[in-house]
Length: 276
Image 1 (cartoon, rainbow, N blue to C red):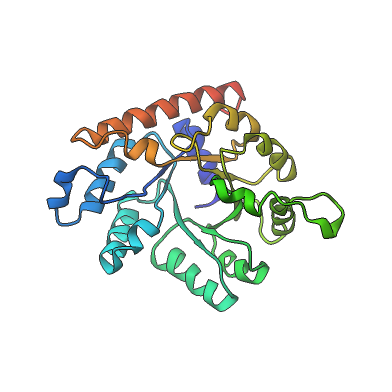
Image 2: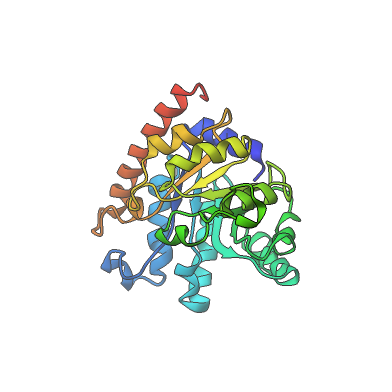
């Protein structure tokens, strides 16, 4: 999906919501376990309930890979069912030497049909470069993640440079030269609102994928005010807070209610920033 279409969808739906499809068989309603493909049946119901309220879906591939070939088949059916009017993120956190990354890129972009894939930058430019070879596809680079362990390395100051830069700042500064504002976005966790504003100054025109709102405690209004740009420029992801709003037969309706709550807040924020 090209950047222009993504921005258009945000304005059309008055939403920058990404719904994370982290589908866990231990958490979905038990009656679905009797169906032929419980993962897909759960995802299908969530998608039907939320597709008008969001612009993106983000299946975390670990929740599919763990079931082998059946899990991959469920993921492919899910992506096919979402269709072309949502930005599809394969949350796979790949990144390896160049020829291996080229195969990962082919798997997720050519074969699976995702619009973006999360990529780890640790191995450097040649491990990320192969993902840029696809028109309308996106590298979503890990910069400052929402988990507690992010402080172990990402916030460390790089003493050798004498600049006072932190690791995540160096990652953003260096990698921003690898791709364009239409092919490269960054993962920045909602649990770091105080740093979002500084990151936005570093990369004013790149999209940010912001996980951590909801179950991880990030505040939607706060992170939005810190990170919006004139085109919106952000996708805010919620996974557990939406898809597991209920574990009963009303799970899809409960998911829709939570998604609508977030979309309404997003609409008000977009209006207050004169984006729509």
